[in-house]
Image (cartoon, rainbow over all chains, first blue to last red; front, side, top):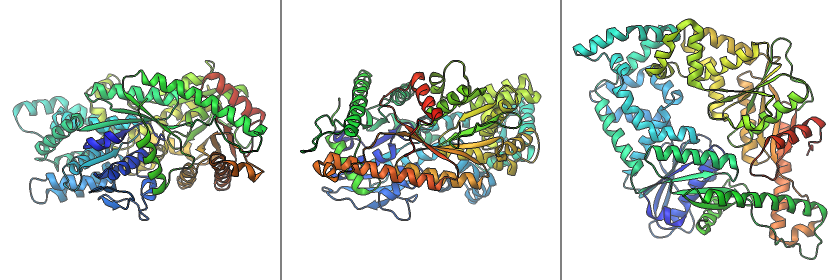
Length: 352
Length: 286
């Protein structure tokens, strides 16, 4: 994996929940910093785990903080931050505002706060905004991001497209009260739609949404321009996508399906990491002690599992993406020392 | 059949079990195992899978009902039920559903729970098991009810939210099964999940520690001294025992341990095996 973090400017770690994406992103960051790169790791996982592992007692913040890493070469630096959708939404609104007071108006709308945490798509869109900002931040030459679990990771990639579609959407234009004869005709034609929405969710809610959207008037073109830039960034040759999966058929099948969906969006997967593979313990040393029954049972269990995993690794190897099998460490990775050992394992790991 | 040894029946209608836990801990396997065990205990069981989580179907024998519910189609169904008729389809196809979802955050989650409630009240089942999404999403799903009650002043969505709230808070009809792994971080997060459930007033019907690997507790220290690998194994075994004990202590309901099978692909026969062990009490109590 050394080559990947040495060459690219953006590395995106994707995978299902619980496969170790966040930890993998951090370990890749350690590996990159040790090779002299100035790297920032961004996690979208609100759990405090990564912050704890990197030694931030107060947790990660919405701005990058430097991490002390041993064995860093040259200019190498490791920074880490987490995505805070509410903070990010405020930044985005402030940076796109086109008239004085507009940002405050948009931010004071009661919906702005609630959508920043709960609206499907908002968090994903904010993830792309952060990534865009960091890529253009001169302090860093590599940004590593871990994404939400697979289904929502695709939403991160598609967020700019969805935004552009939404800005072009008839309902959006209607709600924005766009002018022109055609728009007015359209407005009349779709009034029942608005009424229907109101009947389902209550008209008070609809009013709030309309005023929320209207507070954005004039910002559309700058949102759209940004979305187009991000679309390009995803597909750039300097961006790498790394898929992380557990060595089980269910997990690799899901990962392959996700890779297909990425491909359908014009994005290729660069590496396939099978995380926490069972180590080879067939040559176990017990000194002068005999291998007793419990140990023999355990060895048989482990060997059976390892054989099944090796078959699976071979199978995944035929999929057309370079596969990296990373052995499970003997301990939970929950601190910087663990991350360094995982980075060692990643540096050693060769493709299958 | 629940970890405390009782059969999960409700006085009226079906009992609903929400299988909860963080990503990758084995919620789907646990849901399939509980469904199989309940089926063998003579209960009429339905398992509900959400969106893409259809692996369940391949894990349960064909005589167990499995239904997949997707957020978008549940909302469309709901609008149809509410008499919006063909209009619902137009709403869905024009993308307005997305705007509705945006307007009332959590509406998709609510209609999924509404669907579960509908299955439970259909009279066709004794037990409805929901293979819930991973913890973060599941908690926003469960709290979507309160969120919607706060923002929606009237109309069918509010009625739906109130009905679902009643089901979730009724400990005789609904309970959570919290699934975790015998590792430090998953146990910590599961204990946080238990606390959040208590705050939401959702009762815990039981805890499951899934995929527990065989461990060796070397009574003779000389083994652990013989090699680094054995010392590591010994340490892992001790950590695991401590994590299991910690979850038992912190979880307000009975907890049981389920073994990991040495395979990369669980099949129906494996689930039958786990369900059989679960029912006969063969499941070891570490």
